[in-house]
Amino acid sequence: MAAKRENGRKNDPQRTQEDILDVATEEFTTHGLAGGRVDAIAEKTRTSKRMIYYYFGSKEGLYLAVLERAYRKIRTLEEDLQLSNLPPEQALRVLISTTFEHDEANPEFVRLVSIENIHHAAHMLRSEAIRDLNVSVIETIAAILDRGIAAGVFARKADPIDIHMLISAFCFFRVSNRYTFGTIFRRDLSEPATMERHKGMIADAVISYLKT
Image (cartoon, rainbow, N blue to C red; front, side):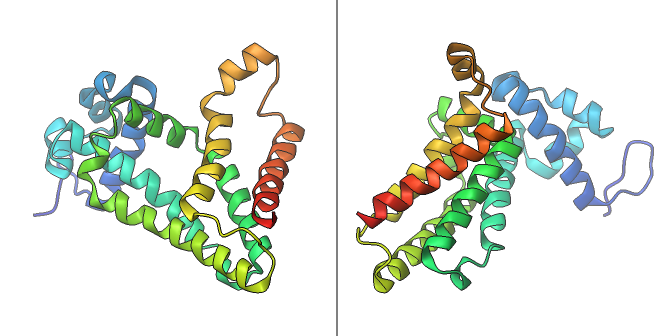
């Protein structure tokens, strides 16, 4: 049976779910899992709690769907880069730039990951989708590193998970700690020149590490 809104108009289930996920992302990143209210999400999407639970099962199920979509977005972005067609160093620089720009443009992703860490990844542990999604970035980095070693571009046989963590740590920190770091050191991390300098710095650091 096709889902309907409370006013009886026929509804597109896929579009409805995407609308719910959009609003739920804002609700959870603003108030956290505990503070996020399904009532507020239902009101803003002009739907009902019953419909939200029909699609996602529970508040925790909705939160997990938000997490999965956030990870799917960045992994899809990476896959679209077609890095296997680029020389190893260029491929890694493009991947780093993409990660940097994604985190900068999607602070809600950083907040969601921070919230899930507060919960010791309890909800993420239930998601095979998130585990499967994140295999791809490690495989991508591993392939770049292997090509770099084979071509004599890289000298160090690095662990691809270590490289992923190094890239993620810098890009993530700039967003997650923007306000505290900016307040302490009186520096605006969103200032364009600072962003460009940092983007180049993390790429140079990773490449230099691999070449030594």
